[in-house]
Image (cartoon, rainbow over all chains, first blue to last red; front, side, top):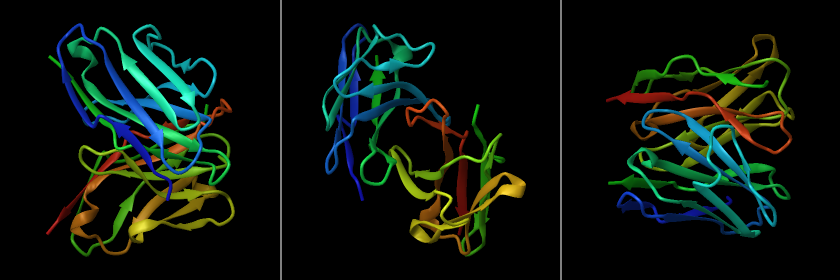
Length: 116
Length: 114
């Protein structure tokens, strides 16, 4: 099946620093990728839709200047949490949509961000 | 707007017993319905996908789900639970935005008792 990777899997940073998370589709091209946030014991909440070659579409309540998304190629999207604070600590999951093949979203393994 | 509801945030079954996880969709018949599984500290793995080609959908790991229009349901079942099935299960439906976004249910945590 289709594989989506995320890097890093776990990151701990100090408050005020920026953290970049990469999401890659390894065996298919994804014109659309999605970034989700999951709080402990809760469901996934869509943060933004990342479109290759254009600006990301953010969900209501998500600060676009804080969560910078770049989708520079058909296999890579990055999420940068700028000036991270403890309340940004969460599990971030990306997914990539295989539009041409199976018309299905495939999810990465997630990145656990802890801001001290 | 299209959404799904998962009844029961926690389900416990004995090893070897039937697994039944409930999911109901709202409003109109969706073009797709999904079940995903999430193991601790991991991302989501697609279990199965309904595409209207067949009402009974077989997925990985022995799971299957039946689409019932009359009940607006898409419940997930497995005849015999295994210890390795312990995980969080999410039902999901595409949102009508046309951007292939998914709306996730609140999830059901399955515990398998030895």
